[in-house]
Length: 257
Image 1: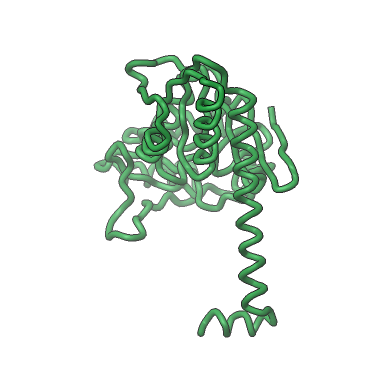
Image 2: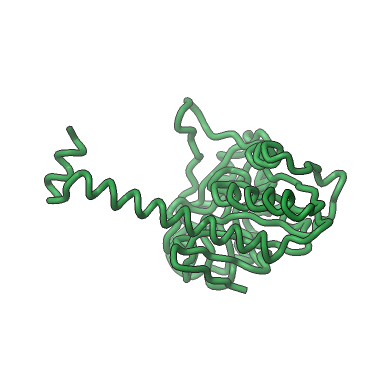
């Protein structure tokens, strides 16, 4: 009833609105797939140790990696950044390892929530930022893949959910007050949607989402300052880490080196 009334008020037929939303979703998914396939085809080589990121775009990268392993007989070892990534790797029967066995990686491929003109990324919308940054830092090459909606001139232009910050549970309130007092904005605790209480990371920690003030920021300095607050485990600011960012769109791809 509500959706029909809403569409009538907008003078849009319900079916046409559904089709339009479906087309938008299809275009985004096609962009993710194109970026993922290009990254795997361009950067993955035989006998590599590869960090596997988290999120919806990585599903396409793992699919393409499995295709190449099967078709070309590539020998690879995969280090996942989350429970989700581990499930993707094992479901496709790719060789699984970890940083204890392979502390130096040849390549890491991951998605991003937003990327600015300087290749600074916001990551952690899915809550895996600490593992993702550790794996990316262990890799000789870090490649980010995303659809074109994630590309911005400045962080915050499109991504409105703030910078994720993983914190120790006992310290979330003191960290929250420190961030808001020193850097402005707000840093609410991320709450779960289908259970009462906060989101808990794979590491057993909590997440704050820093809704930073508008304007230009020195993200490199801010990243260090946030990390220095006692109780902060990691931030979702990835500065000077991505060697290449590949944006996929329905009509093609763009690479930001």
